[in-house]
Length: 144
Image 1 (cartoon, helix red, strand yellow):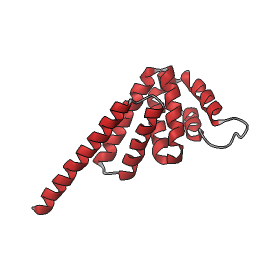
Image 2 (spheres, rainbow, N blue to C red; image 1 turned 135 degrees about the vertical axis):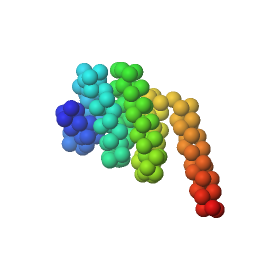
Image 3 (cartoon, rainbow, N blue to C red; image 1 turned 90 degrees about the vertical axis):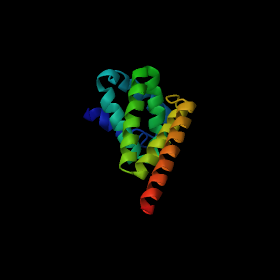
Image 4 (tube, rainbow, N blue to C red; image 1 turned 45 degrees about the horizontal axis):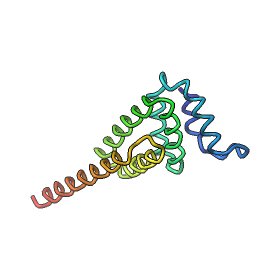
């Protein structure tokens, strides 16, 4: 697990000037494919943690997820489940930064063919509805 964590946290770093990012992602995805089944849970948690802690690499993580999803649909399904759980937790704790970064990542997953456009639009609508409900609830409480 520590090897996977180290690989995932360093992906996209400019330490290898001789290889392109695309080649690095392809090699990393190939290296991680063997660990997809036994380490799927750990990989999804680390990727989502990296997305919120290393936001400059969001598109890199989305591209990697697209490659891993191509190798295993179960990886993509688990990633979406974990993304939903993390987003729900961020909403419950009103962690606006995490909400913003996770929604941005979901949008990047559309480009990586992990999330459909329709699902992403539905997510945005659900967030708007939740925001409106909170505003109405807040206004009602302020009026009491």
